Length: 286
Image (cartoon, rainbow, N blue to C red; front, side, top):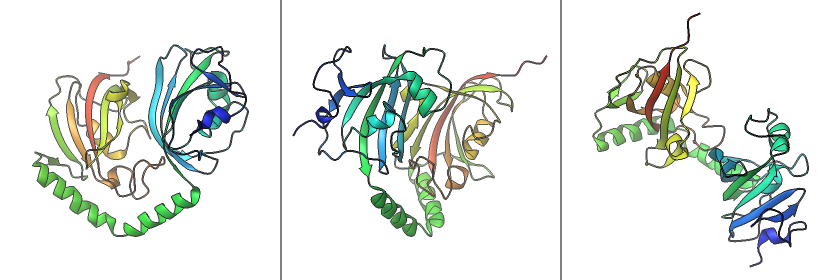
């Protein structure tokens, strides 16, 4: 099979970046894995990807698993063009303008570790491509199936706890809390700046997010709105610095009947979080 990316733009020659070829509009690429067919992602498709953003010296500053609807490029050399150059099961690293990515795509300030003329690397692993029609049909079928899923979820959650023989403590809110390692430091209070590691997974054990695997602990001011889901915020508020706990959240204390905005967490889905409080810093009193 002819490589998909070879046909894009003027890319039949090696570029000034060793191992990369030029694909037009200032984008350079390096193909890692060849897809199973030549049907590439197009605007309107729903794509599932593993993403990694790096500086040119390969220092990773963002890594995530995402599902979203692909939009058309709004300017030449945008990251949307990179997504559109890949077929399912294909992976590649792209070199694009850092200033354009942050300023035009994210509409945010350029991070302090990047300069206006810098390039950045975007590694994309295209896991799945669905047309909008396929996505809508799948969602409609799923929502129909889970009309009574609220009660079903309770059964599944109870069975999981019984089968695992977990020494859980049921909170009044519906959280299941299991202390793994006692904390010896300060108890978390509203206004504290806390640093945590967490791993989130479904009841079947499959991970959907992990700061441990990314090697990127999460820091935020406890009590600030929209930082973590409701149930996880409650659980963290019961913990101390150095403590590690397992928290099981029913869906109404996680992403509810809608699921996550990324599509990664389905509606009515119970979740497991393993949380470790690495540091608790109280606000200074002036």
